[in-house]
Image 1 (tube, one colour):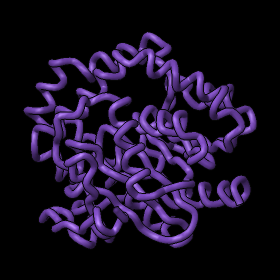
Image 2 (image 1 turned 135 degrees about the vertical axis):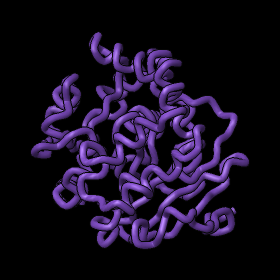
Image 3 (image 1 turned 180 degrees about the vertical axis):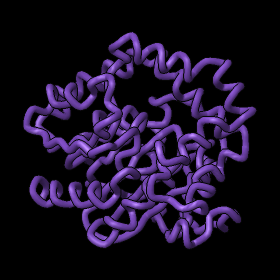
Length: 295
């Protein structure tokens, strides 16, 4: 079956106007699950992967990169515009779904651009199918078991039943993430409202915390990813982009140990979402790096 036979456009929610999301809203069926995704532009393919929130955070760089690249991103089940499913909420399960998504779209060569827990998802795919991945842009992410106590404490706290219940009741994390310390530094009120749109429902709020909790249970999977960085994926062109004010666990330096020839960018005054803190600089650096390293 061709991609055009398995995808369709869907109606926009009231809170997602064309002004705040100037892209088509599409879905593709994966094992009976309608997965919402964005596919814009022409040229070399960039696969943007985040897990925990939703793909709206990529909007500002999609606008800037889709003139030179084909830019693809998706919402995992129970997040963004994708309905919930009975799949396990884990990095490994989402990585397997990402692989199905890539195959269904017929993506045979692409650059992985991964953020936050999207690193554990996207690098898992790269480790299994290295022939698909030309290079990697890794931004405020990691791909190994939680290696310092403070990181483990943070994950346990965010994945706890207390935090899950608190957020399900108050919508605290999405509301904070929509502000200037999260994705909203360059968004207006309508843009911030759109970001929190899916979190009107309690399911997406809970999923975020379930995914955080899963990281503490996936040591074998994450150890496999770190091995892949120095074996299967060794020598891949890599660009790491981190916020100046949000790398407390030394992730960027650890990636440099695995990819000593990789390039680095630090976003001045950047926090957890570098692509939102400085979308123009982020897009320009990705484009320059891609031209120099992959063409």
